[in-house]
Amino acid sequence: SQTIHQWPATLVQPVGSPLSLECTVEGTSNPNLYWYRQAAGRGLQLLFYSVGIGQISSEVPQNLSASRPQDRQFILSSKKLLLSDSGFYLCAWTPRGPGRAGYTFGSGTRLTVV
Amino acid sequence: QKEVEQDPGPLSVPEGAIVSLNCTYSNSAFQYFMWYRQYSRKGPELLMYTYSSGNKEDGRFTAQVDKSSKYISLFIRDSQPSDSATYLCAMSSNAGNNRKLIWGLGTSLAVNP
Image 1 (cartoon, rainbow over the protein chains, first blue to last red):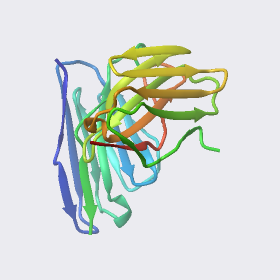
Image 2: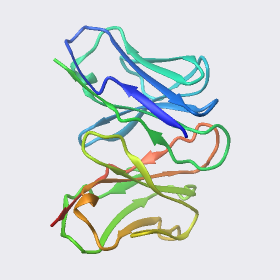
Image 3: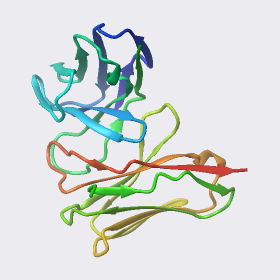
Image 4: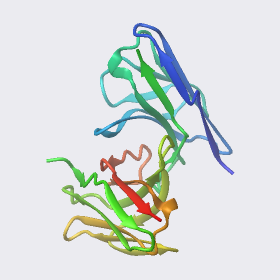
C-alpha cells in the first residue's frame, strides 16, 4: 500500500534561519506531489506542485522554494525564514494521470518562526 | 466572491444527532467534489469523493451534489464524539495531471457525548 512520510512533526526556528522539510512517498511511482500551507482562517493554500523529477510549479510568490530530486521525494526549503512563514505545512500526493482527484496527505509539520 | 464558501462554524451537536455540512461554489465547471476530515494537528483525510451530481453513501456518511444550485452537502448520521473534527470541502474542474483543488475554509464540528 501507498504511504506518505513527512518530517519533522514540529519545528521552531528563528527568523532568518534556513528551512528544509522533507516528504517521501512509498508504494507508488510517478506521483504528483504537492506542498500546502494551512494557516488559521485562511484554509489550505497550494504552494508548489510537481508532476515529475525537477518539474516544479509555484502557485504563490513567496520566501519558499521546492525541489524534487527523486521521483518520490519532495523538499520544501527557505534560505531565510520570515515570521509570516509560520504555519502548518502539508505534503500530499495523487496518482499520475486522469482519474480520481482526491489527495492523500502527510501528517504535516507545524512550523513556528520566532 | 470566493470560489468556494463554507461556514466555519463551530458547530456543536449532541451524540446521535444528524449533522449537515455544506459548501457553495461559483464555478460551474467544477465536476469533482470531495469532503475531507481533519483532526487537530493532523493532515486531512479523504472521506467522500463524488463526480458530477447526485448522492453517494458510505456508512454513516452521505455526500450530495446539486450542480444546478452549486451546492454540496455532507450528512453524518448517528454522529459520534469521534466525528469531532474540521470538515473541508474541495472541488476541481478536471481530473487532469496537476489536479489542483479549490478548498473551503473548513467547518469545525464538535459532537458532545
